[in-house]
Length: 330
Image (cartoon, rainbow, N blue to C red):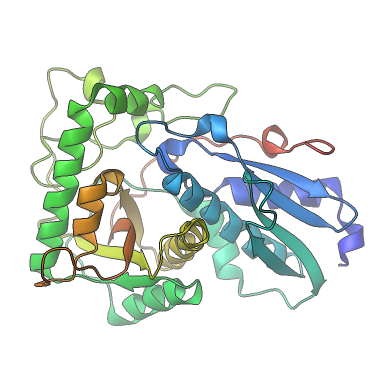
């Protein structure tokens, strides 16, 4: 198939693949525009869906858009084109975060990532204690490296430290009126917008003693619900980059999504623990090497991921492709 034969149905499928990516609070902070002259898809930030309190510098927004870029690349390759990607292509257009041009014909890549992107979604339920095989760990590490990021598997002691930082981030978020209100704004029942996180997707409520999952729905159950038994020794991985520029945030998003798709292809579930990343001092501590002197770091932490085997859990809604497309010159 040549780029000149791109039709409306294929365009909708490509954008739907991109929209299937994860995003912070399911804000889906992206818009797409097709440049028919160059057969290029532009990915713009939907700044009005940014999180002013939780993400004041837009790092999480860029990571979210990076996830969508990776899905788009996978889909473009699936349809037989070579995806040629540029990040932040126009300095004078700060909301234009990436472009993906449909290059010459290429052999479709392995179908497992394309199949996985339609099945991938976060699971906020307890996982089993079954460990990840060594081969899967290697594949996940290689997936991050392929996008210019590092994936590290911390020791049990280090994992405990990271969970404590996550729990502290969750405590601070719940204590901050602005942040708590912003988070809970996105807990909504499905509507035509396709945005937000319905309460039934949030997983079981617990006392936050075992696993500091983000407590979006605490206001829905003020009396609390019975505690759930999460795994005693969760498998955590930390995604990091060498630098911390806007391009690094976009690369981190692509690395994150590639890791999640590879995990999905192996039947591994994932949930994202972002709370500590929302506080600069806690984020610094996430990246600190075990036993290092105070203030030293090992790269820049971009995401903490919990992996394991367990129920898939329900998926959050997505906007329709046509709701995200910009017509004309935007």
